[in-house]
Length: 391
Image 1 (spheres, rainbow, N blue to C red):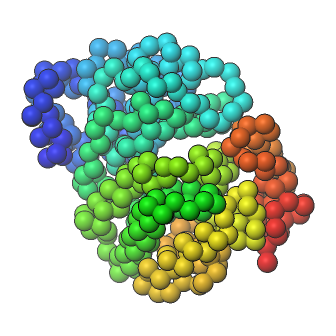
Image 2: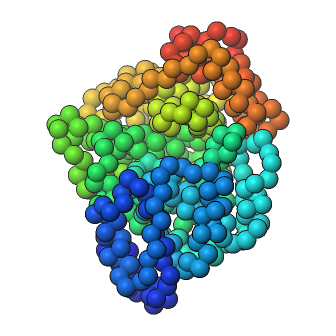
């Protein structure tokens, strides 16, 4: 919080402002909450406590509640920061709220470049992995499920990354955060067939670092130790920077189909997002490696995995499918998903409705293709014609 205190101390305009602090219930009255309050100093601070992800109605109600605030500080995980980003932008006027409430089947909502956020937002993340504090996207819950809201104006004005904010984060969630950042980086790299040497080199370097960090988290857990402040800080900073456009500029914006499937799976079953990602990743890579070009490039997957497999404390299998499954299990990340046949079919149809059937995001993938992925993610053999079956 020293950085936040310095920012406010040197910004004469911030002194005397009406400040509202949005805090996740999980960190209310914690050390980091007290440090944020201390950094604000004499500024008047109203504190609003949140639990859960909220929905479109609660976000718009929060926008009204924030009327009069001149500075907003969001302290919490990705869900709270997403709510803070959306609500403060919705304060700009009816253009934003109208876009958030327009009836549509698509899982993607794209905001106009304007208006801009009328009050500064300072984001203080208490988790690692989502990188919401530096991203131009947010997840928002609707009756039909979660939608992805995208717009450059969503990005907070300031992100403050402090290791004190993640002191009590369980080791398993730190490991999940590393995998989430890794999946975010490698998905466009593998999902797009083209070579972009500068961008490829950046992704390769950052991904290798993340694999090393993931094994450091695992080794600390095995030794019965907590992750050091330095380790958590490096993970948080790399996770935050993974949203930087320079990693993937020039790539197909829809080369991330695994994210779409995993998010719908997570939402439909009410399971953790990274549990869904971890279950889906091996069958996703199996399909790509078997030649399913709509999901990605087998050549680029093999190239990337050849770089990543030697970054840990032990050599991983050369096959990317068994290799990534071994990595996930070694990091003790849960990848067990239970699906009935009826659930799998319903989720496949739901994914197509939100992202395909004339929409460009799925690249022509049909419900049968997705059903094969979902069944294998749940430990079942594919039962319909679609993606290549498990070997």
